[in-house]
Length: 396
Image 1 (tube, helix red, strand yellow):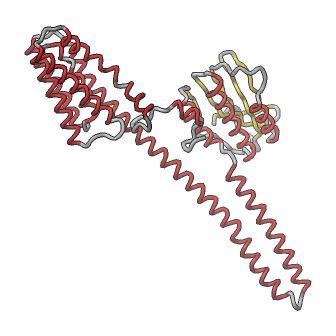
Image 2 (tube, one colour; image 1 turned 90 degrees about the horizontal axis):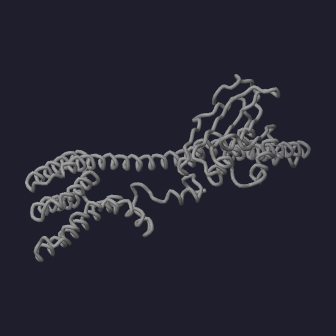
Image 3 (cartoon, one colour; image 1 turned 90 degrees about the vertical axis):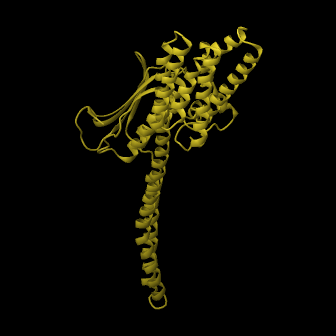
């Protein structure tokens, strides 16, 4: 598992990090692939320059301008994915793009109208939201006037330029939200870890503070009694031994509770893992654990982890549903965990080591495990007994 709670293979699949600078050349190439297809609108200028309709000087100047325009556009958009330029630099580059998009159609013909598309995309993707509204609008108006001036009939591009500009503004806002959510998630995880450390520290302080104080007091008392009352000193030493043993038991229980799997935390991790793997997930938020012993909760958490691991790695599923329900059975009330997917369930002919281990773990907690193919996928059901009766079929 990685620091963000995802398995290594899932993290590798999610290698293209939204809104973050590429970490290596491979990631840079992957991000560049998302930009290059939009260069299709440069086909008309290239065809125009190769047609021979212009003089040698005009053709050479056109190639220089086209290469410069493309280089500036790719630079400003690609840098915006990681470490963007400063505000003045971005504004200057966008103005340069707008100037070239305005001058080239007026001097070389209507085949260059498509350059306004890239200006609109650059405005929406790199400029601040308030300025981008005006920039996209002015760019669309400039394109409209150029179309009137050169007498072109490509009026549909006006709508394309306008919509693409506003669409890139929406994408930019979505990327910003994704980055903020990622930071918030990391902060919440850090706060949860700190809170758990504080809880353990408080538990150990409460457990050991009284015991160690009592041991110290009885040790001093035994030391004073030893010369004149060895029998009473021996009794104090026996008390010290008893207190020490009880303190050791308390510490072991506290550490065991600290390490045990929690179903609510595993459900949250399940949602993240399935989503990252491209599986549509239906996962309950907070389970009702009334009357569920800690050992039973831990067993269900391990069952959920094993089931989700199988879904992600072996099933090839596109949808997974997780349910946590209280049910009344002939053997008494139980808490039932059901995980069902629409995948193949793996290629094994029998239960694997994971399911065998889960069965043994659930049996120790007094529970049962059922797993097998259903009509449209694979279903795993784990049940553990509940101490207090609950309503039949009440949702978690």
